[in-house]
Every structure is written in C-alpha cells, then in structure tokens.
Amino acid sequence: MGIGRMVTNQLLKRVSRGKLQQPGKVQAVMRLPFLLRLGYALFRDERVPIYLRVGTLALLALIFSPLDLPGDIPLVGQFWDFTLSVVILEQFINFAPPTVVNEHIIALGLEKKIPLREV
Image 1 (spheres, rainbow, N blue to C red):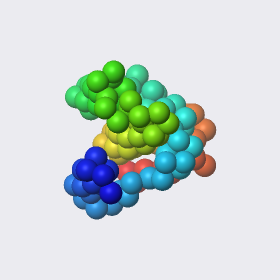
Image 2: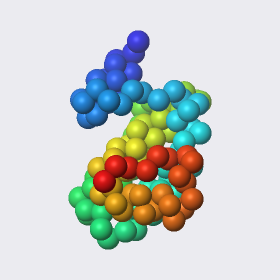
Image 3: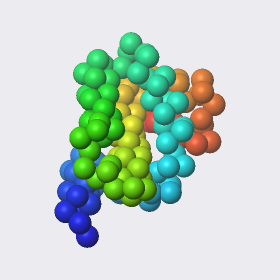
Image 4: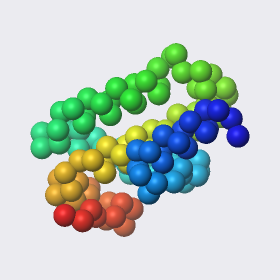
C-alpha cells in the first residue's frame, strides 16, 4: 500500500469518525454525476454556510490543480482525482443542513440514488 493511499485512508477515518469507508474506484465514478448535481444545487443555495461552500471549492480546486503529483500518472491519476472528488462532495453534503439537502434531493429526483437525510 502506497503512502498516499495510507494517508487517504487515515484521513477518511478521522473525518468520518470511522463511518466512511473508501469507495471503490468504479463505484465512485458511478456516483459522481449524482453528487455533482446535488453539490451544484447546494452550492447555489444561500442556506448552506459560506465557509462550507468555499472550503469544498478550495479542496476540489486543489485536487484538479496542475500541481497534482498523483494526477500526472496516466489513468491512475484520473481515478485518484475522481475518487477524492466523490469523498469531498459526500462530506460537503453530509455537513450541509439536512432539510436543505433533502429539499434538493427531492427537487432533482435523486431519491433512488442518494438517500434522504434524517432531520
């Protein structure tokens, strides 16, 4: 196991308090379109705290910046970027207010793809 993967696993454990496991690469790529739709709707909603929106944008920009060493490896780098993007978007959605998230999930018709949050 590489150092980057080990650091990512430890970061996921700490951020999610052990509840979030690293998604499979194929599973992550399959979830990305739904998370992007929901994430975009939440970014535009003023009820989501500004620090949460700015922090998420900064992390996504860092992942896709040209200074991304793992991103330079063909094919592996792209999966790395997409997998990290899914994790960041899922955490953004988890930290957003549940009522706002549920409202957007229903409005976008994503109930079958993304579970509603408990209020």
